[in-house]
Length: 267
Image (cartoon, rainbow, N blue to C red):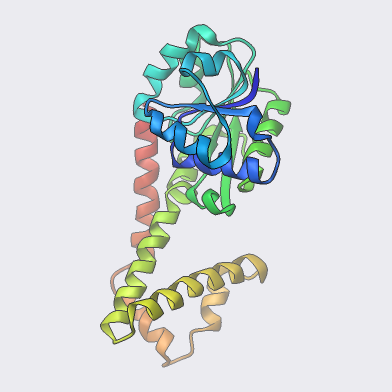
């Protein structure tokens, strides 16, 4: 029996495999994967030396922990496929919007499930994951899931599963908002004459440095913003242009729209 099986071999599964193997939380020989696209499995196998299961049923039957890493749209079909092989495994789901009650019902009502929402910075070991356990999962199961995602970043535990949709809207989808912001910074700088390479370097380091300031100074976003906003200065001019288009409101609505979509996927 393998210790850890990934049902699905996409980008997030790959990020987790990388984090776990590189940090030696799991040995490569104790990890395997299955996927509807065999080339995805071969990619992870070549990169990290993990095994490849013959099919989903084999992977589930012979794994102590199964990470459900398939898209929400195909989850129900996958649950039907693997239900006959549910024994004493722990299931950890990273499918956006799919509640533990739906997973438990799909697996026959007796499975232990921890639901998690990681994000793509896990690819570089800088992710953040929120976990919540289902009705049949234990505190020990939650610790296993926390250790799993701790290999690729920070982990937050919550007790109220209804919060997971907002988590999805913020940290799950949030990296894309930051990337779009970076595109805007680069576009504006290029329009004013900066070479693209220089504009990218300045934008990326500015975002990284600002994030570190938020994490390490203990100051609020409002305080840090005020520190660099002098009356009549350049920063104020830039902020006024953004707020004339309701910048903060638009960003907040992005989070809310993603949250609503997460709820829709759950239904």
